[in-house]
Length: 294
Length: 322
Image 1 (cartoon, rainbow over the protein chains, first blue to last red):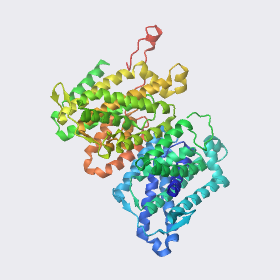
Image 2 (cartoon, each protein chain N blue to C red; image 1 turned 30 degrees about the vertical axis):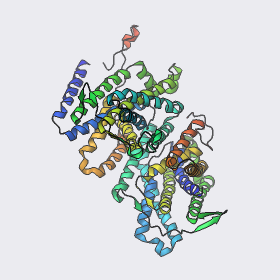
Image 3 (cartoon, helix red, strand yellow; image 1 turned 90 degrees about the vertical axis):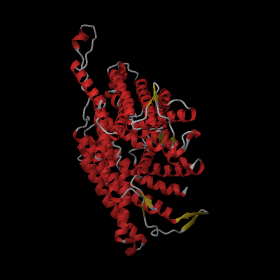
Image 4 (cartoon, rainbow over the protein chains, first blue to last red; image 1 turned 45 degrees about the vertical axis):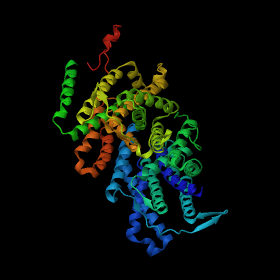
């Protein structure tokens, strides 16, 4: 259950990237899962090459690391949008989807060529291994930290979107691009911004997975990406609080399913949830009813 | 028009002599290309003609291949006799899973079909029905026999697979210009208008799915016969991506385009085997570039051509690509 919440936090962070891009561009960014992978690998490189945790101590070191990873992945996300998606803004939606798939294959193989196809191992003495007693349960401190980190990031994003002018511009562009343009909003800048924020969160999630599980692989982006997308649909795609709730919920459902049904079917549970949601309530839990028939 | 067909015939005949000039390895590569061509042609019905974003075709392929393997290894049914059963079972599976999702819009359908192919793979790994052999798969599938002739070597498979492919091409070419094919194209272009003109869109879309799955199931038989070993990893999501890309890059709804796509996407990476690791990188980049510079695919279908004079005079004759 607590594991479910910790993993759910990661799903939620990745799902935010999907849902924001979908909200503004109506595009499933298939390469998003791979940006998450890149985050995990960059985190590993920076961690081992710079020895930040040695100089600054565990907490500060990881925080600085997280910021660096976020900035780098955000830059990659920005470039991705400029190269692979912007020229296709006016094309049929399928073209952009195929382009996204191509970008995903590109990233995956780029990571494989640079780091090799084998599992890479994070040094595992960075995070504290203590457990905390919570409501009579022994919970590893790492899980609580992970959960809290993702919640803090999500709340930060929520206030940014709801309270600032730029956030309002993003929401406006998501509702109606044409009208947003007429109101003097630079839609291209909004899209770029979305492709900076989403990948930054995804990269942070990648770093967290690396630190938590200790090993990473160049293909892991697919599974996390698909599950995070499921989470985004579960919460109602295009809906930012929905992605947060959907991610946490999916993490918990998966953990409970693995515990009470069968661990072997763990990966299939998310997809069953996805199919059932799309059949029963395609707009998701928090999605608004829209006239546009799905 | 007759000259055009004559040229196709000559090209096909020239292609049929290919195994005489190349070594068994390259014949085997051509066999793989042929298998993907059949799969992509069957996906073309769903994706190209009906315009439904279906990225789970490997699921139907897997059902066909596993049906064949189980029938052959457990019940000792000759491989090629298992082909209709493989097709029918794949079609039934498609009927059951596609029925509730057929109404989903574009990218939602895409993501659900990805989910289905993953569920099928996980089910196979978990040895569903205690028949699929789990992660190791099924081995010891017998070689196929045709009229008492045992098909063993790559050259034999070349004629089996490409023969089947030729039948597929002829059949699907006819289908393209049938009432069914035109209805699917109408749905792709404008579903609401099609519905308004009395096309039963739900039935046609489901029909496209079932037909595509039937064909993919039969291709599964060929795959099982060729490999003699099948395992869940042969039917991963990646296989679906390859088929999807063949159709998109070749040209949706165009048989020539899909064939070209199969050669480029399955055959070309073999040519560059020396550069093994970097080729997928280039492949990904090429997909992006392709979509930006030539969205409609390499060989898009020629626009439908109708002879208006024929229709005006009431005889309703139709002449394609005159």
